[in-house]
Amino acid sequence: MNEIRYCKKCGCELMSTNKKKLCENCRRNKNGTIRKISGAAGSALGLAGFVLFRKAKKK
Image 1 (cartoon, helix red, strand yellow):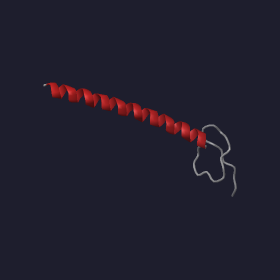
Image 2 (cartoon, rainbow, N blue to C red):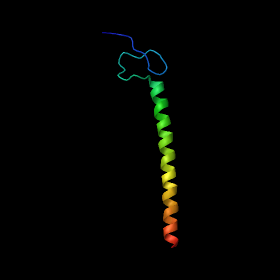
Image 3 (cartoon, one colour):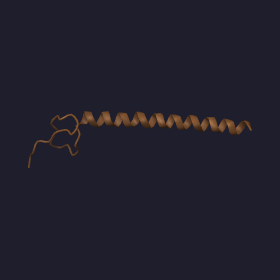
Image 4 (cartoon, helix red, strand yellow):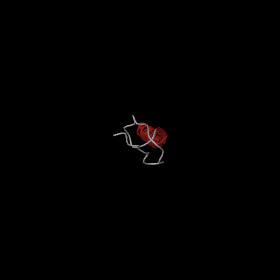
């Protein structure tokens, strides 16, 4: 029952209490990348909204 599990991405040994397929380091890296992408998308949408609002106000 106590089989040794390994991280799907880097291959390091996982703790026995870990329920995920990735180690903590790989999970943090993945979440950081997702956070950066979503932040950039949010900034682009905010800028586009601001530009459209300014154009509508000038008319």
